[in-house]
Image (cartoon, rainbow, N blue to C red):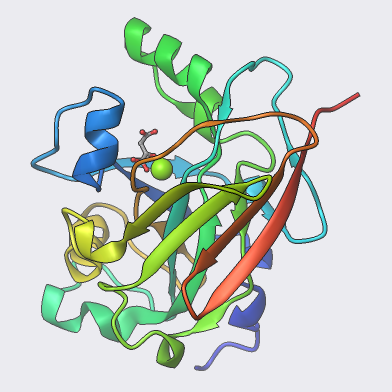
Length: 220
Ligand SMILES: O=C([O-])CC(=O)C(=O)O
Ligand SMILES: [Mg+2]
């Protein structure tokens, strides 16, 4: 890597967070959405990042904040229109991520045909684990991800259930949005999304690789 900045703290780079929605059929179905034939994309700003030790804040305008546990892909080498067969060369590593979603606000946006910004892009909407170097996950298309709220298992899935694979997503996204070193791709969530309240404790993991813990708070 030629950059002097350290990808171990990719969240400090201020680069793009590109999110893929409805990439697991069981989650698309639980929210009564059609299973997509093309990736559904949206963005979060880098101000959405939060790391362990800080709390996830419920946005003041929401009464139904949901967790979505997702595998994140950290880009190590930028590119435009990256072919699928070269896509993994652009990956530096991974992170476990939460795509925190104000579900009530998202439902209203969907009804009104408005963008999801208020539902998905607020401060602390992207909790992330430590950086996981690429070598630590031999097959990112076959890892188990899970999430517990106050000790109760709510989400459990395997990245093998994803509709669009990581190489496909890197290729697809980079044709539309140039990828840069330090960008993060959130690859979508399996079923089991549910509401969290202030004081809840979220524990999430990639089996055998990493776990992370966050508390939920509400601004005073
Ligand atoms: O809000 C949604 O249901 C879409 C999404 O982010 C996901 O599937 O991960
Ligand atoms: Mg999501």
